[in-house]
Amino acid sequence: MEQGQGDLERLLKWAAEIGISDSTCCGDSCLGHSLSVSYFPSAGGRGLGAARDLREGELLLKVPKSVLMTKESLLLKDEKLSLSVNDYAHHSLSPAQILAVCLLYEMGKGKISWWHPYLMNLPRSYDILATFGEFEKQALQVDDAIWAAEKATLKAEYEWKEANALMKQLKLKPQLLTFKAWLWASATISSRTLHIPWDAAGCLCPVGDLFNYSAPGEEPSRCESMEHTMHDLVNEDTSGMADVEQLVSDSRRLTDGGFEKDVDAYCFYAKKSYKKGEQVLLSYGTYTNLELLEHYGFLLNENPNDKVFIPLEPEMYSSCSWPKESLFIHQNGKPSFALLSTLRLWATPQNQRRSVGHLVYSGLQLSIQNEMFILRWISKKCTTILKNLPTSFEDDSLLLSAIDKIQNLDAPLELNNVSSTCRDEICAFKANVLQKGERSSMGSKERWRLAVGWRLSYKKILVDCISYCDEIVSSLVHQNNSSQK
Image (cartoon, rainbow, N blue to C red; front, side, top):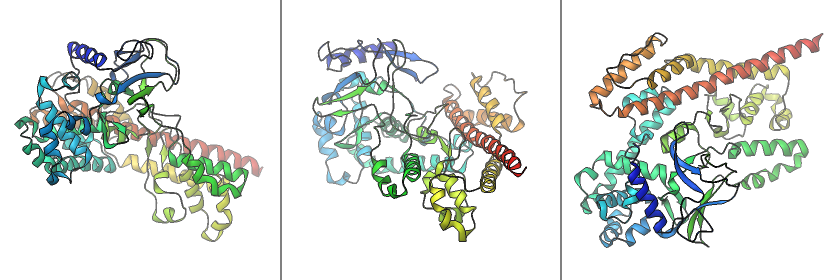
């Protein structure tokens, strides 16, 4: 739910008064020099845009430590809260649980809270996995994703029950003691906190949390960095293999801001140059779409860090030394370096593996026949996974379009192009909403849309992988035929 313009204006006025600044030349209290709050309908909704041309690496925003909402700052402002939280009986609670309780306690203060202008601009609901009902969970279709959603809900329920004694000790209002309120608070912590070195729970950062997310596509994952570094070292000098681990650890920063002790403030920098009016984005790190959904409640249509893991045979894992998390298919449909290496070695007779190991780990093809075999195996595995899912990639594309057209439950929909399975899903959604009494809010529509969007991106990776493998196999067949003439 978007907050009103009046709430936003009060937030920005308050922020400037307490020292939040986006300028190095206007003193300690200045906003509007470099950034402006704008609405980007196709790119995250409300966010921060460039108020002028910005240079890569330029300081964009500085938020003083005194403004950050942390356990420490909340306890300093409230003796009752401090005494209760520091009670030995609550020492088993995690830092995130403590911060969630403190947030609910602060919300209960209403207008007398020092952070009231900020609290009024927090979202009133979230769509992280823990908020998914049974219908939305099943709409994910993929077992790993359904299990991730179920674990997220169970974890939230367990943490809420654990924190209940502290919340009752603080005499929170009844509506703030509910599981729904806890989900809101824990989702706020999960999706909006920024890293700080002195508290594992992180901090809530007024104005700084208005930046929308940009995937750091230029940053390879740790495993992929290791793969390509190893590839380069082996090709240059096999004796350099010992240096791989050291080189991998020297990775570039994945985020665009951090707390700086010398200025006692959280500082944000431009990850690239921006023209006036463009949305200024922030990288939180590398996340798959399922991880974004779990922790932040949104997806990226084009996420360079997304991936799909396909089930492998037990002997495949034992035939190589690559970690399991490196054996996947990239967002563009290409098998990872480690997955190809693993399958090349697995497809080699066991008595020959030692002699070709150095070739495999350097990323080289062992033979045309070996390469065709493993690519056909991957293609077949992807095809089997797609066939075992209730709907096809094409079905989901049409269903997603149909969901976007649902304005209310009574409006008729044009469903001629949608499969019977998808029509059944639409009917099930309507029945689910009516049963839960969400007729007016349509609260589960966005979560359903996210579930369908996630499974669509999952299937697209598999479809693209099939096309990629089949294309390479076709090329190899032609190459093999030409060499035999």
